Structures are given as C-alpha cells and as structure tokens.
Length: 447
Image 1 (cartoon, helix red, strand yellow):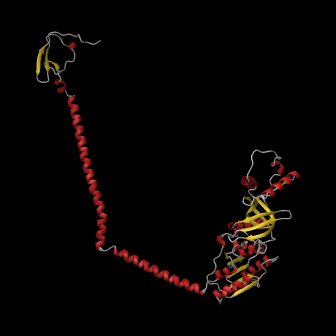
Image 2 (cartoon, rainbow, N blue to C red):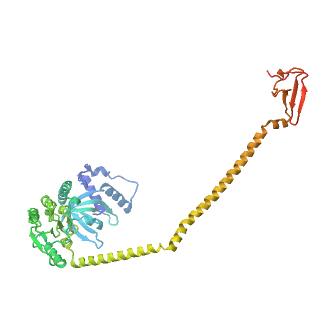
Image 3 (cartoon, rainbow, N blue to C red):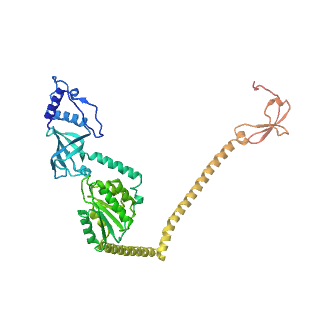
C-alpha cells in the first residue's frame, strides 16, 4: 500500500470517526484512540515538505507507533528469494499487507509457508521509502492457532521437567554392540525403510524387531506408549527406536503426549527418539536417552559399521605406537642430559650465578664497613672537637683564670667570702700566681 493510499484511508476514517485497536506482541490491547485525535483539520501551514521529508515523517510515525505487532492473515504472492529471504503478502477480505521474513529468522519456522495458508505474523512495521509503502518485518511466523498449542506444550514441558523426567543424570548409555534392536513406528512409513536400509548397510546380521504403531492421529500416542511398555516387559531388545518422518506440528503431537513421554522416561531399555527432521522437536526427545535428528541418524547411532570399528582399532593402534615412540624419544633425550660432561656443565651453570652473587655481596659488605668506619671517624673527630672546646684549659686559653684560697682546692666564685689579707692562688693558662687580698669590693652584685 502506498503512502498516499495510507493518508487517503486515514482521512476517510477520520470523517467516519472510527476507532482502531491493534494487537501487540504481548497479546494485550492498547488503549483505544481516535485517529482524528492525531490529525488536525486542514489548515494553512508554513512548511512545504518534499516527498522524502514527508515519507520520513510518516516512517517515524509508523515505526515509532508500532514497534511490535501481531497480524493474522492469509499468505498470498509467496516468493522466496535466492538469498533465502521470504517475501509474501498477508491479506484478508478487506486489505493486504506486504511482509518479509529474513533468512536469519527462518530457523524458527515450524511449517512450510505457502499461498493460501492462514498465519499469525509477529514483528514490527517499517516503511520502504523508494516505493512509498509500508510492510511488516516478521520475527516469527506461525500457523493460525499454533500459538495456543505451543503454549500448552511449553507448559507441559515445564511441568515434566520439574518432575525430573528430562534430567541428564537419569539417561542411560547406548550399548556399543547391541544384540537386537526394536523399532516402534509405522510399518508402512518412510522411517522404517530408512532405518532398515542403514542397519543392513552397517550391520547386516543385526536382528530387528518391528513393533507397529500409528505415528499420527488420535490414539497414536497411547499405542506407541503401550509398545514401549511391551518391549520392556518382555526384554525384546537391547535398544529401542521410536520415530517417524517429518510433518507439521499437529502431525508430531503424539510424540509430545504426556503418556508417551512418561513411558519413554520409564523405559529400562535405552531408548532413542527420532522424530521428524533435524529442525523438528518433540517432548519425547527430551525424555529419551538419546535424541537423533532423523530416523536414519538413529540407526547409525545404534550400531557402528564394521569398517568404522576396524578404522577405530587401526587408529587406536597407530595412536598407541605414536605415543610409545614419543615417550621413548623423550626418555632418551632426558637421559642424554645426565652424562658426566653435561652434569658438570649444569653444575657450573648453577654455581656460577651463586659465585657472582657472593662476590657482589662481599664487595658490598666491604664498602659498607668502610663507609661506616669513615662515618664513625668523622663523628669521633667532631665529638673530640666539641669536647675540647668545653675543657677548662681551653677556657683558660681565652684569658680566664681559676682563683683558689692559698692552701685550698676550693674555687672562689664570689668576693663575699673574702677579706683583706687572704692569700690567693691564681691558675692561668700557663703557670700560677700567688696573691694577697688588699681590698674587697662587691660593686658588681646584681639585684
């Protein structure tokens, strides 16, 4: 649909005052709104848009207003591209909508799209400016009504997983050389033909027991579960294969039935689930001891081909011989390192760094001792000078004298204890003088 057709439709819907509701991906409805609330009456405007500017404005409105939508419609004009993308049109009785699904999203498909199929597309709206059209870019595409079915299967999966039916710790290992294989499938389907063909090619003498059961339709799950229980009750094989070829989600439903899944989990015989193609998944795959992408792959997993076994034996022998040769060569090289010459070289190689470290330490110690001795001599000389400057002889050298009373060693420090006629002995820096006190004066007495 072109941009101008969009505006034409919006204009008429404004006149009729209709409201529109759109379904979002979270399955909730947006609050109703009236389109005339978003379009103002035609009034003179100052700006004139060119086509690109107007298309960009419309693109912003559409892509910003519908970031996630779900649309139900019928596929028409379905045309896959060479690059792997899917281009088609969704239509109903009143309108059409261009749609595209890119290659990276195709792995989510659970069916083959085709013209005439009714589907639900989930994604976002986008405008393609070169053509002035809008389209839906599909993130997922499912058959109409498939979403509810998938939701029920997901709920059953969570419930069974919570019971521990899918735990890896309870899965059994497949036997390497099974003596008998039981296959539970349709006796007329392509799956049994593929399985028998592979088994004949890989192990022609392996006995196969076919337990027939319908693989789709009402009652199929109960019959398959009964055959699983029967094979266990009578120990009919060393490994069991259940499976069928590809099909739609509805065709594969029996293998997601709760009764069948519980029978698979309860099997004492190792069981392989091979349902559909590689992209198909059933709940029996989670409960089985081994999941094979196809029935042919299940047959290949059951028994190894004779050529494969011989190849594995030859490879093991070659690996063992290579390992022994490598180990022997390593031991020889190790022993060569322990000759007298090599030991002497290794001893010198180990000793030489230690000798260098010893010489360096010796030189460092001698230097430290010399430095310490020089520092101590310097400090001693300084202390001697300080001590000498404080000695009485040095004081006398500066012109001072020591005065004592004659016949006494007591030093006179004050004139108060003297009187005229006292004899004095005066010691100078060089020599002594005897004197007699003629007069005592106390003029320099401080207050």
